[in-house]
Length: 590
Image 1 (cartoon, rainbow, N blue to C red):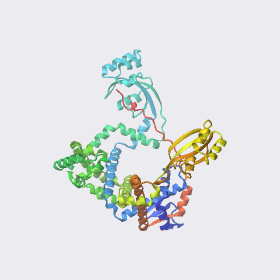
Image 2: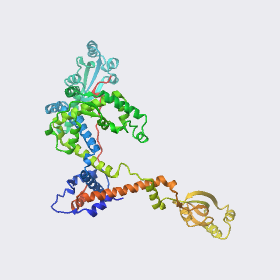
Image 3: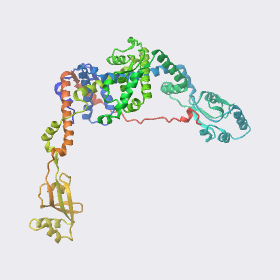
Image 4: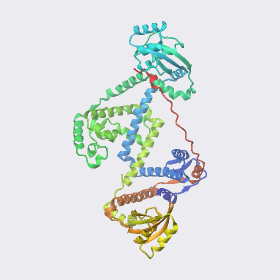
């Protein structure tokens, strides 16, 4: 079914065709521009769309922007859900991603990446025997020098039970996949060489280099991401230590204080509330916070508000939501927003977890403040995320405000809908048939002819050796069968046919029939309610679309759109190629 929006769009809105317009701009909705690139990105999500469906996808883009503009016109950006959801996503991005990346960047330099690239030009295969003491390692090394088998000694002595099964052989690896002291020794060895005892955190190793071969690599720029990951892994301990230091540096001066009295009061209330949840709350993960909305402003913790450098906060409306949240308090409302609904029972019904969650929120706000002061809020990907979440919430909350969460209908509306559409709620009717089957058409024709003047049962009895008789009961009159469809034109007792069947012919007599009739309201109420709700939703959607069209300026560059539609080339499907990683090479297994 075509979107209502399109009809209104084409009937009420001026279609722009100015040849001087940028051919990449397909539509203008107030300050929003729908570009050819955005349209193509939408089409790339799908495969094999018809032209009609491609047009519908374009209409969906225009429709969404129009409703966003209308939402801003009616001030939906003040809605608490718009503020909280947008703010939460920005906080997560800044604290959990951008600040973390910024810290990591301190541990990676271009010379280090270049050095790692050079070191990974070779791959080696080695075998080792791991023991607990240097004396034991030296003893085994002497045995190997004196001719004893390395593999046999590995199986008998190595604490690395995984490689012991393969005669000590580890398998091929490149630089950065082993502990540092181990690979320092291995890559300095010649093929066939036996090492002196090498001490690591795991014990003492006797190492034998089995092979050293070139490791094909792509150009440095193409390998860079993989090199960064490898270097981060190598420095993981150092990085984690530095991150903890940063957190402590922020947390200690912030003086986070739990309001024990308020926390205890809210915990008791939530616990009691969980015992008497309303029915609708049980549909939402038994969320114990439902029904306690009046308590959302209760302060559970305080901390020293971050001193944010305003010059590093982008001049975007949605960043105001973020700053409002960095107010030096953690409220019940903050916690409810942060904790997913399916996890709320676990968090809110355990006082220790509840207190930890409150502290974590306060700490997270401090990390967000630090990220802003580093200028991370000005990064393009953060701005893009904020814009995307903000617009999506404006769109959703505008529709929710106008259309409601779900379309509700009263008893009267259901009855009225039923009366107007009673013909749609008919019992199909049923028919009982006696089927007389024969292989020969002439016998079927003879039986049909005789049935007009003689008793049908007597006729059948006379032909009983040449026919088969079946009784068919309660067949719906709307069944897709020729015999049943023909039955609609006949009365009880009448005979009709013959009907061609597989390898024969059939004559039918109607032995019982219930004509179609409207179902009572009581029987059909649930279906009528569903249909009434659907109808009301369509009407509400239409009303919203008409309102938007009257209040939002929409211009379609029809010429550019048709050209873009004509020139679109579907991207070929490519298989995702994934690399297999050998986890055992990153450490020793024992």
